[in-house]
Image 1: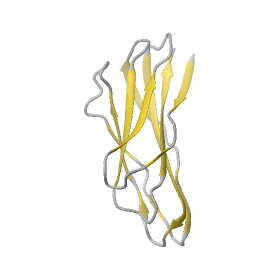
Image 2: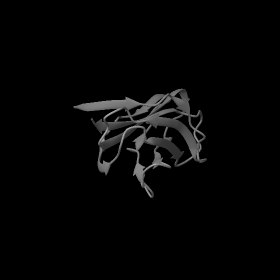
Image 3: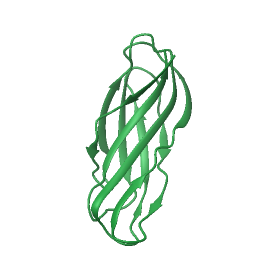
Length: 125
């Protein structure tokens, strides 16, 4: 069976590495098979701002380092809202029940407003 896990939405810290929280893998977890990250800005984004960054995954329980995943870049053509689409990046990391994975995001540039960012994992159980 496959489970999709998501962390809480967090305001990013622009070009500062910002914690997105920790996901604890459920009972029966055997493998992380994917990771994703979504970011969206509100109406304060300005014309021609580029929204992109890096998702980093770290764990005290399993060796993920270094695990850096680029976010899909998005150019804002007119003032308004912007959203980086979810793309599941494939992984193949053996795990066990209770493994903790923390997500971090670092945006590529300072933005008019800090986007709301969330990450998630796809796990085999």
